Image (cartoon, rainbow, N blue to C red; front, side, top):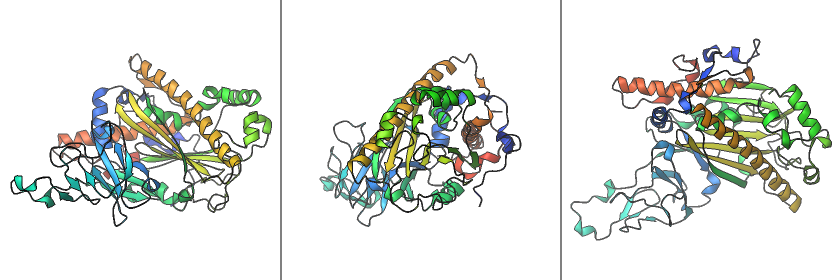
Length: 447
């Protein structure tokens, strides 16, 4: 298993000829019928990250997640049972189908700790392992076997503290699905980084468009120019920005880039508040005192070229989970949860080693708010993109060499849909999209 990307044969794109070089068709981001197919073919059949184990610190801890990407109204409960096993269930009472766990508003996610789950409609009770334990006025039912009416389980597995679920009981195991990238990331000190900041917003754009924005740096010198000092911004605008490496393994991809120096070589490149707090977009400059984050300690998938100027790696685990590492010793995640063909919920979560003093706390807060400003700029641009591609004046768009991972994302999504449609046409209702490696197929509609 090698994490050194293939040497470029004139360009990165040429290393994956199956992706082609023709303009990419964006019907997959504007067609409502295609969106419905993605729900069935992708979000009901792939592993979806729904959080980290720190959200379930003890027996009886639980939280709910709304999953509209897998179908309107779909809701699940994540819980740590008495044996400290993390489980997932559909959030539905088996009596009359009421939502089981919710507070004042049934559409809002909730969390807490309990010994059992009790339906607020008729008080049916369920153990933490999902078993039905109590039925109000049970004697009035007809031959009711409680063992047959437990909560409906959802497949749930954990990798490196990240909790994943899958609505397809026939899907491959999680680690097999995540593949070599995940194997190469194992051992990173995720468990040390429990200081958590999060943002969540509904974006008026297709879910893939936001991923598009985060897998290329071609836009950075232009869109984010105002966040850099004048001299640095002018230099970036003139010469552009090139990443260090790209790599693709099956459904998943990554981009490795320079930047994020800790501290910057030239303090004039950053703003006064960043100089004071030793922090900024790339995170706190002062590395936390933990093992596993120095250059010679990093897992092999991170900074695969072992470049001295390396600053950040972004891993895209299909369909909607981004895991991004920064050289100073912190990481963040992105999630993109589609709610319609032209809308999705964007979640961003930043993770740091807990601060030991006020300066460290403020440096982390500065990184969090700086990131938010950049994300707003991307989101605003994407909403403008959605309005225009929706007119269908043009549907095919040229992509440059730095946009190789955009080609891969849209091809992979098309492949899942095409396999699902073929399976349905052949009478195979499962249409299991996770059973093959998509990057080797050529039946996509992009080229």
